[in-house]
View 1 (cartoon, rainbow, N blue to C red):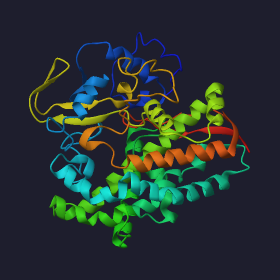
View 2: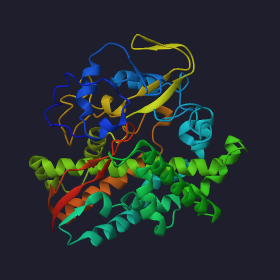
View 3: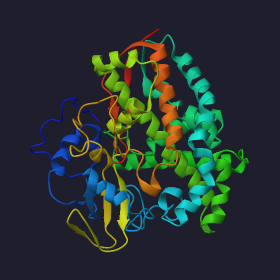
View 4: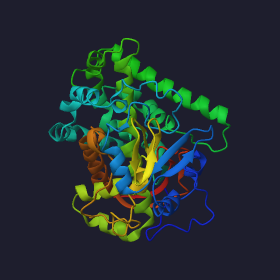
Length: 408
């Protein structure tokens, strides 16, 4: 998201429509969200096909929605663009289930995702990511998104159990499956492209599961979810493998993309960054707050309730706008300024409560390793063109990032 260090531009005359996806590629949504946070209650919105939904934009309201899975269910969809009968994986995939099923599925994978387990992955991630840096050394101008397409897989590839020869195609497909990349595409072409991206991912993961992946990988543990869920009508292991891949791959690279834009444009921040001996957790947390790679998550009310004085009938869709909550002036002093050592930092980029990202420790280590390697290898960085943004109301994605780099 193109955001000023000092604050958003005026949003007078700006439409309050939160759904329309094309605007997310060209518009500073933070200025709109800031205006909407000033209004009482939840915002009532409508999708182009007439589906009504509520929007929670303040940190307190987003916190309330995400922290109450009993009242606000995940077992429908997490994305506004999925409606009708809900997501095909609803009630079967880890992110689309509620307690008590959700923690039962989570226990299958928890041993792979603890802080201690993530630390054991650190050496391998560092070696694989260093090889990726070495492959770029000497290139003074390049599209970071294309050159680093396998970056997320250096962190999650082996953990997922995906062969390295599939990393490039998988990396491209996971971002493409979140939205459009070409504003000039027709709606029909865009839907076809999305279908192709999803099909590619399913094909790769299907082959991985058929080939008996290592037991200490996510894919290797996915077969156990079939018994936990007890749904014989769907391929539950495949749905969970897909959920993990789509959850892991966009968050880390999109946070890194947004931070590279910041580092390229802000000389003071770059100077501070290069003086650090290593990247600490405060910088990573602020990067996550600033980037907020997931704009919103969707919930469905299971009973009549109220949030911020707004009556929410049972069955209503409620979108919790994490990206808005992460700039809430009531929680974050000077929220439109990147503060690299901000503390405390109550960002919600990893979610909250029972649905807080299970892979947060792996993601944090991956980002620390990247920023340490960038500091070690790069003398200077500047934008070499205008970044291109994903057409999506769900993922705050950069799909083209031209950089000019001087190597050490």
